[in-house]
Length: 578
Ligand code: PEP
Ligand code: MG
Image (cartoon, rainbow, N blue to C red; front, side, top):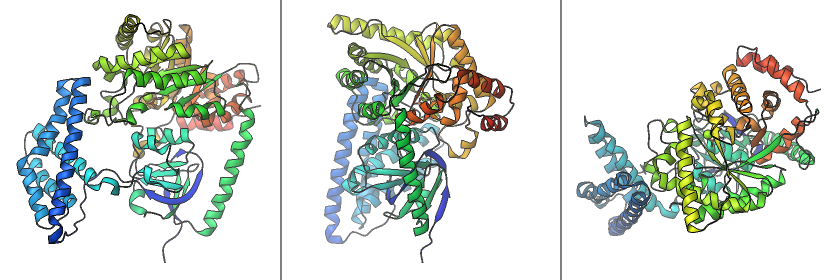
């Protein structure tokens, strides 16, 4: 008899309950399963291999062209190196020989890569040893072509399903928007990994950091995702299913009850009005943003445009994308964050290879990437500038670590403006420019940064990661990732006070802003604008409308005297609204 009610504990990434059947999303990988090919089918197998190699070569050549155009010869060489591996006669012959012995092309690639990997491992020189990864990459690309349509993707979903995977990349989440995904569970990830925050924006219950759920499930198996408590139940019993069905109904009616707050202002009992914005990743989300009663877009993660395509967006692509949001959101502000590629958001533009770094979150990411490749940056800035005539568009730079980066970015912005003037394309000359405060060095010099920009927005997802030295996507240390650490509280107070002294507004667009546990704390700290997943807005509005600014300030004064997160959490629990 099969075992029922297997409970796995993970990290609650997106609230809610989902009950359904498992859909296993596989990663691009090599195929180690040995299957014999009958002698009369060997020629056909060799033809399959030839076609897959040809398709991979075409992809790599296109990559080369794009990299060369946008990033220069040096990066294009990466694609070039892959083409060389693909054309290597020795490796090629070994694969062909292995197929001739009666193996599938997929298995032949796996076996030959395994053999060559061993030789690479024995090489003393680190540079040449690392070329093993290039070989594996190329092998995976050919294998993906061989598997073609056989590999299941989210686009194959025919019925409501719960997606289970080792990891879901931000690129996968783009297709999740259209697919019939009712919930998901992953081995990897933390509460603020991009996969988790996309789940919240799509209102899909999710549990991440389950370590080995992907090894424990079978395609089509029954599963429950409890995103409220961070648990997953495999093969649930009838009784468990009916308990969770009741919980699901409560969830639906709670959401309905919150709808009454949609058109009410977010104003405290003593009359302070707070702006509640939404975080989005694509223009399609604007409908949901308006439905939940947001006062603007506090963060448009524009890099998602790069994650859903395989070629670089043009100025026109950017412009068309942003005007859709700007027009629909009139008269509210739309803060477009310039691309934050890198970290866990790696685009498949051939930039994939550029993203390979030992510490991607601390690497060539966001504004650093844009300043290194000003031509890529300028294309986006021109698109944003042109969209600024159609609405209240603002620009925001991510991952700022010092004043010189803002100055350098503004210089490129000036060049973009100058080019548009020459081309006779209109834009808002007084477009407002802001900086994200998400790197501790920026936080410490908020006063200096405030002199260079019109507004700042605190990105707590990264600010906490870098201040606490806790990788935001690492499940093993997720317990250390806590916005209520005294250091974070002090830092937030410092940022908000410094910005106010300089006379500018402070927003927050990290996940902390949409977490009801911290709403009163942020009010007490004096935050001007909160930006979050649209679905969170009614709940946060309800809290703001039930508390006074004075009471929130008193709470914060108490919390600031605590010496540990545990003490702070005890004080927070004691807090009474009235
Ligand atoms: C943040 O770091 O808080 C943030 C909003 O940016 P992202 O999550 O996209 O890194
Ligand atoms: Mg960030």
